Length: 420
Ligand code: HEM
Image (cartoon, rainbow, N blue to C red; front, side, top):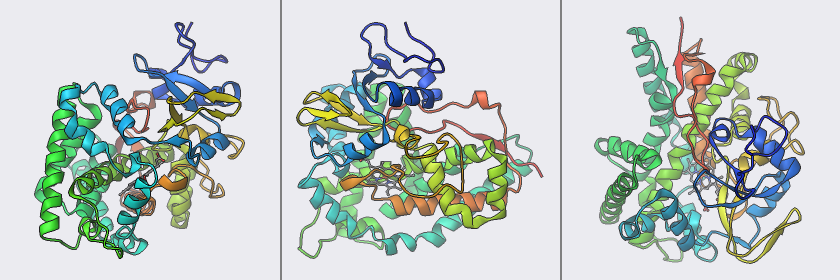
């Protein structure tokens, strides 16, 4: 029978011996990861009611899996898995599927071509130029929270009022989405993440797809100074994204650009509030910030349970053979807590030597936005800590809830108070 992950045996579905990722896993996946790494490092697993897949949890295996050419993305199959997992009916799916047919879901040579076309616009220089603007946005958001607290509100929600709008606004500016339309983006994105029904999900997806399609058409006709316009321009070989490819790329950037960074900020603030000694050190020495951001990403990796691949042929990992055609999840969140690589992996340690974390992936799909995410994180933490010399959790830690997702790990809300 099913067991509590805090106990010493695996949580197995009594019906088929598959590891079950249930509510207790969502609340705290780390005890189960630890058991899996030591007892069953390559296992079949599933969410309650969901289809089963393979889950890889050891650092070395996850890292090797990320560069294994036999573990492929296969955009068409992936889209089908996503459609089924979100319960979208087949006939309503085509617009949604086109949006998923993007670089992150592609294999070489298609991936190589798409990545080259976007790399030319996503340079370190282009990202660095966003710094002053991100600082202004972070300052505006902290001032708005401070004003509400000063007016007597008991608490603000650090996710909804800060961690979400900051990267969302930045990615909208990168895409050149006019200010008046950004609120809609936020609401589509919320609906897609936590839709009450497949119909709602499909409607929000379709609305977003339609908007992005029009946005690309406008940028092609009237290029601006934004990064999307640069992405759409031909490269030195006169190659360029088609309209359909550009729309899927915009959708990828939009989703990847904020659904992850929101969790870096939310989970990082929670880690600091749980570790007052480390928080005090960071306040006293802002030079620790870049290392702190790496440590937050390691400790509570936003792409947590896994990124998804298919076995193109039978693949043996850690002595277990995964048959061809099966879905393989490479467990980044578990890898980043593997004691083989990280001492006392469950502890927040701002002095931890940097390097080795798989939070941004590894190999050809290594995160395109890593420099942007690090910059956003650094600014977000610095501005927040400067503006609020005291920051405390406004609810009991047992009341915190995490999104229920096999891809992303993040807090649904983080109510905080700033006294004094
Ligand atoms: C890919 C993590 C922020 C854009 C990835 C991958 C990971 C990741 C793990 C690889 C997935 C795989 O191999 O299947 C993160 C984390 C972030 C973050 C933890 C924030 C803390 C961003 C931002 C952007 C972005 C801000 C964009 C503006 C992308 C894109 C890819 C990607 C386009 C696909 C790259 C490819 O397929 O070649 N990210 N990401 N990410 N990320 Fe990020």
